[in-house]
Image 1: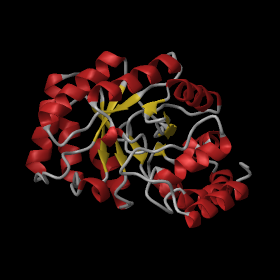
Image 2 (image 1 turned 45 degrees about the vertical axis):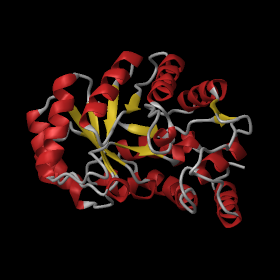
Image 3 (image 1 turned 30 degrees about the vertical axis):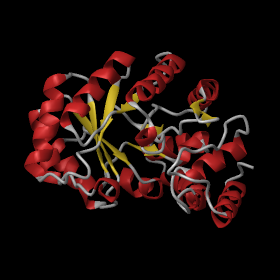
Image 4 (image 1 turned 180 degrees about the vertical axis):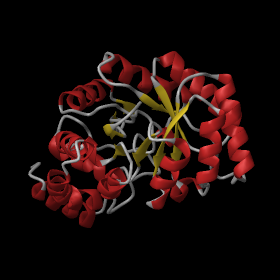
Amino acid sequence: MFSGSIPALVTPFLNGAFDEAAYRTLVEWQITEGSSALVPCGTTGEAATMPMEEHFRVVRVCVEAAKGRVPVIAGAGSNDTRVAIANIKAAKEAGADAALMVPPYYNRPNQEGIFRHFEAVAAACDLPIVLYNVPGRTVTDIKPETVARLKAALPSIVGIKDATGDMPRVSQHRASCGPDFAQLSGNDDMAIAFNATGGRGCISVTANVAPRLCAEFQAATLAGDYAKALALHDRLFPLHGALFSDASPGPVKYALNRVKPEISAELRLPMTPPSEASRRAVDAALAFAGLI
């Protein structure tokens, strides 16, 4: 269902408020440059700092700006099952094509609790769900056997954004969930290996800044042209690292502002601007990639 280069969009702020005009500019640029879908209000979009009304206003604006040209996968997870249900219903009402949903964080449920959480969410709303497994942030891991169980039991579970960094899982998920299950990397620096073993794309931080290069890279892997893919990977590799040289999304907002000055690098607390060392690393990586 989903494949290719899918940016986890930053959310532009100006004087503390959502900058709708800048966001529409960003969405238009992403589509023009070849992004195959869009993710508003994920981790990179600072969803953790948004009240629900603002969160789904951002989703609505993304849907409006996309105009049906690419799918919109709205961030909608929560550690409270009731809130997760309200979120996925709001995502559907806002016009999203799917919801990206983390397992409950902080609470640290066991695998049965994770299954029952998604079972309740899927029972409440038929919007397609892309699981988002990112133990480094949630301290909760959707184990491969639970992914397989969810896929078998719940038709609305259509894919996974896997940010575990555990490459054998791509093959495990492919074996248990089938080749049509949309496996999307959550790590730009691992995307070439991820796709080589069965992945279909990446929900990408780097695509915020280099959408055309990321789209060309993904197209090359999906066409089996790994010589071209490797050349693009090498060109982008320093940027993948630099964008995490300080707390995200500080570096990527700084980088985007360098490439598109009309989009502010403003962050919301508790996030703060990247360090000078991080900014230098970003500048060097942008220059290496030919983006500045």
